[in-house]
Image 1 (cartoon, rainbow, N blue to C red):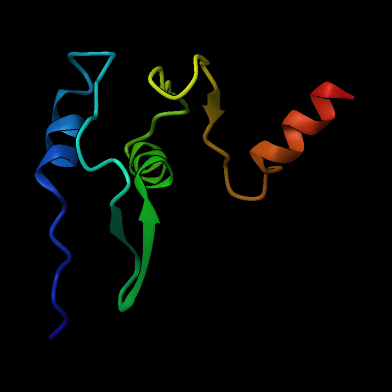
Image 2: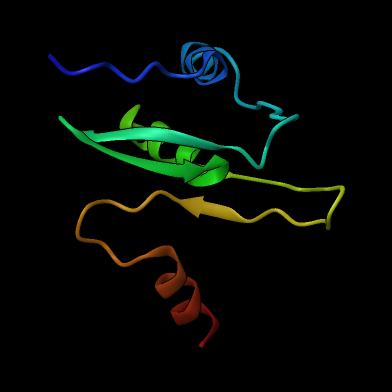
Length: 97
């Protein structure tokens, strides 16, 4: 019998309120890492932004944006890649060329 990975409460709340709200503020332990179950028996530990991107992708979302105003002002927009598509870095590099 394999143990189930419990989702953190904040991600459960985020996914539950996703149809009702379009903005969320995550603060606190933003440098923590979170386990993501990839397949039965396969787990990957991810930092916050890739973890949120993966969870949103699994929920059917296609775009995600992040700001970090205390560190610097910016609004990077992450297109959550589909399987087999070019990575975000490759698309950004090709757009700059």
